[in-house]
Length: 212
Image 1 (cartoon, rainbow, N blue to C red):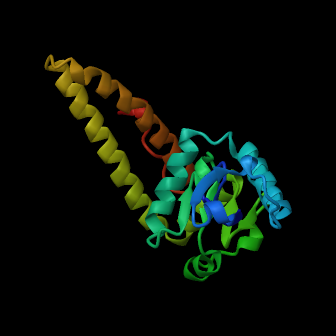
Image 2 (image 1 turned 120 degrees about the vertical axis):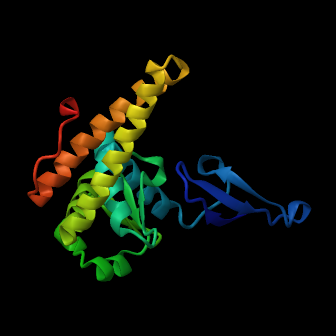
């Protein structure tokens, strides 16, 4: 058999093709650990997997608030879908699909803030949680008004949804009561995320949830 390509999800699987006469032409996906054939790229693969494990472990502390900060900021500027937060299904990890093009488009100097955990994998730049947050900060600083506008929009939409569900609950539609309660944690996360972003921008403090 021969390895045709590697999957992009984690844990990695390999797409293999059988070359023995009796099985020639057959292809299938298989876990890397089940490969029983020599593979010239094994050392490189193991090195890359070790880097993924290290960056995933260091970024596992990512919170829901961190996710709101990063995803809101990335959403404002990444119109080419170059950024993938939760890359490889790992919390706090971001993959930049074309780091050079992104650098030119957004005037981002990777060398100024990528840490020792960051690495390149098949043309993508893989960022740790700390580097992801710093990228979000730099993007926000590039156009503060754009981020503030999006932030206000997202907060207002979340609050309106919450108050609508709460109102339905008060009208006796009990099935909405749980849904109304479930929106509150996200608004609290958004409020904390807004405080972080406003802190970056030096803007006025966002209205606290308990003041609403």
